[in-house]
Length: 288
Image (cartoon, rainbow, N blue to C red):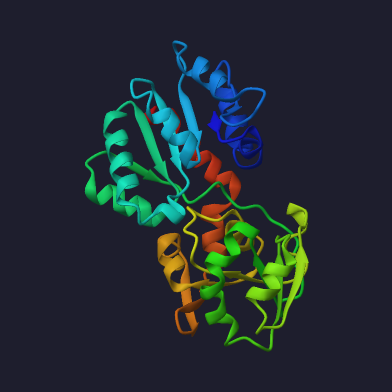
């Protein structure tokens, strides 16, 4: 199992790793950019006979795709901010075509439709790594969970919703740069919570805001919010991009290009972490 760092594998692929250990004799886990292991360890393991690779994240995916003769599974989280890059798409199309021994699983429904439309190769769609239940706070409080490197990209989308819900209390969770956040949202009354433990990110509110602008495959926090039963407010572009209609979700328009997500229980059944992990494992066992 290859990722940019082992920490990411431990956070988001631990369930899959546990199932793989039950099915296969040995499971190795490495991060390309970890100092103790890095590229050399991954390169050495891939070249060994009877070894198949499972990679996540764009950089580690491209690395494993260059070993086109090896069996494996590529989990494409999402092209994200590079979605508009024609060069990247051409590179991925070419590498996917060469890697006929590998399974390609795509987490973004929009990317899945794109690659499926323009390529004869078989692709699979699994929405993310699954959501887990977390305790939440008062329903009247809305949460925007972001990182410092993302919040500028989603601010314009978020503003469209904030204009219509000025009576609600907005809590921004996860950002360290309070000065930057205050400058971005100076026209709105927002409460800066800062970094919180994963299990505590929803404690300040019972509503969850999912803006557009970054282009993730299927955000972990969105999956957690749905499974946890929060009221979810989502940009119309993201409703389509994440395939929420295909997962059994409905929508109620609350303002221009913003929806309140309906059918949360049905979506939660399809994206809870246990269901998602078994979906990955089923595809790997039958097609790799």
